[in-house]
Image 1 (cartoon, rainbow, N blue to C red):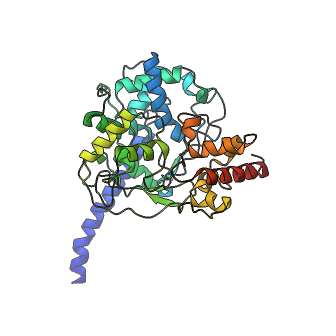
Image 2 (image 1 turned 135 degrees about the horizontal axis):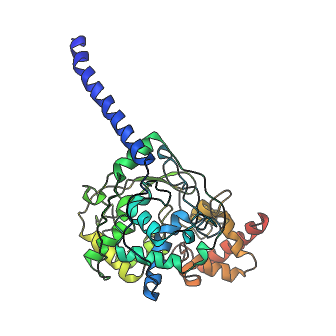
Image 3 (image 1 turned 90 degrees about the vertical axis):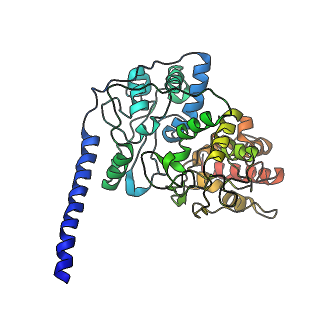
Length: 403
């Protein structure tokens, strides 16, 4: 009996091994070959005021989240939020004096955005995730890059090369594939408005579907549990965290959220319960009401999925009236980004030399002080007195650490 089972299983095992070897060979071929001969899309920079403004919103919402260094410039960084089993990833220094975007042509940059082909001819599975960007939006991003923004002022050195694990090579190339064509099809951007069409487009461009849908697949929009959360990431403390259910389910999703609740969570970083929306969820502070309402309407049009959220990430608590400043700093989530050895520790230097009232105003609503700030607003989590206590504490540790 055992021999019969082995005779049946042996060929099956052989087929599985062969399939694995074929997939490994395919991944190596995709990542190692040169795509320098692939024609770029015929897209040039939109240098109009409207184009540059749209490009700024897209760049600050999409690009700076990965490419923004600790100094606020697009100098690249270690992408700690990527699960370690995929490898070690670094984003490029877009402001590099010799290799930065100011040294690249519109054609080179458009090819990277649309096809994931880097200027050196290599294929980037990560950058190929932007293939849904419409032509007009690619042109707008190029227009913003050509406007010489402060984030791209030449500075810094090259980031280390990313090291993709074998698992990462297999998964990323299966998801992204080698989607490069010699004849690039034009992609239209839907008219801007609070419509399902524009909302669907923005939900793909902002990669809501990529992060808020479990697993790895080439088109997550077709997933049975699209937007129901469950995708594993890592927060700034190195703790595993799973994306949340953002379908319109009343009990486990955002079914009870108003559009104002959704806007506050997306652009201010605070959910209706007064908790911080934790990293690596980007703060889309530059989206306007039309952008937000379109995405909200689209999400509510998608199938509701009843799926409880998985606990994870840096633990948070509501601020209590008797909390000390030290407790507030930890409980409401400040320490995850600004604690000892945290990625944004040096940002505390901005508090030095300011009054307690000024720092408290920043804590309560950073976007009111600096439109587009990536720091969440705490005006629905802290009262003025708590914010001022926290401001005093932040100034003390900023001085103590020489930041």
